[in-house]
Amino acid sequence: MAFEPCGATRVRVLGARMGTVLAAADEVVLLPVRDAVPTAAGAVTGEGIEQAAFCAGVRVHAADGLVQAVVTLGALARPGDVVVTMGVGEVAELGALLLEPSARPLTAAV
Image (cartoon, rainbow, N blue to C red; front, side):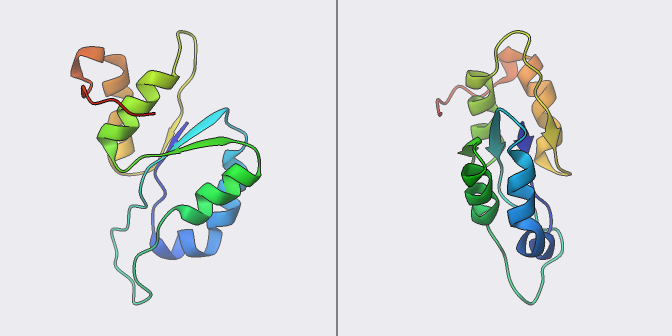
């Protein structure tokens, strides 16, 4: 699964719950928090989500952006696997990049 959390306030309030729910996946690639609307409280990271998911028993791969997420998912996914993408930003492009190996970035990560 690839997850791109959205909204600093939402992540601040619900981040731990998000991480716990992500534990239903075999592995999670966590993209940075997408925050289209700045808040007075400032930016937030996905560390709370990552920690809660890890504590719930899922293997989490933090990606610093789309390129690293594509490389990581490309290395993890095997024929017959289902890759679920959740989010409203860059994560929407992942499916097409995973299905077209020639379009994938050449850098290695995992």
